Length: 261
Image (cartoon, rainbow, N blue to C red; front, side):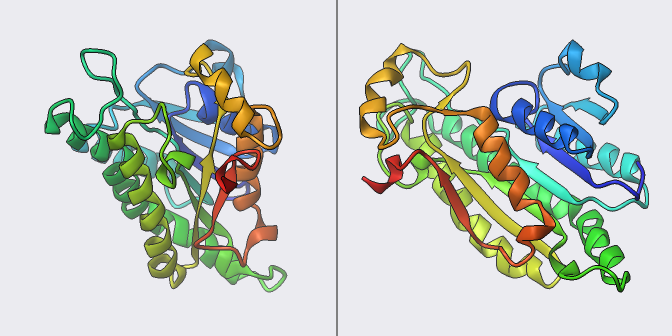
């Protein structure tokens, strides 16, 4: 990894919002390390900015630690400018129902919280030295202003963490609510290290996980359409931009106004 170019680590990169976010950062010239359970798409292997893809089971704490070690080895002494915690799971029961308070084993709840809540915390801890290096390098440069906000963590939360959602089960919704609270706590604790921590909360976004059952929800969206993964990616990118160096502890709703109801 080069310390002359800005760098990103992103989880859940193989599809949807994660894939769109990687493309946006790559188009802006960032060097990128990613992970997911799936291999990197073939066309992405030809992207010169895609430094490395590390297949990882983010539900396995031991595999998370392996990913942290391998990614830090790739970084070497170079700084890390952004960590985007995108990977998440919203499982169904054996009866194809969303995992709720009255159905499904508690062990399934623990797996949801492991990936959606504990893994982002573990990754933030594991990469904070590299993130702090990004701010320190800019701090030592007299031509850079706002250097203490040059490194950024963005957690992908959800509208479901703030209101009852017809298709998001209780396990998923409460894990995202917990991640929203964690974002605020991290923003305070990481500020002294020069690392900003924010979140984006998508609403109804057109991805491969959205089916026909989502169409009636469009009537509840003031902008009368679903969002796109590219629109989420653009917001994530701006939160990692030096222009936002005084923004931390914020959660931005990407919902077309749906969260206002």
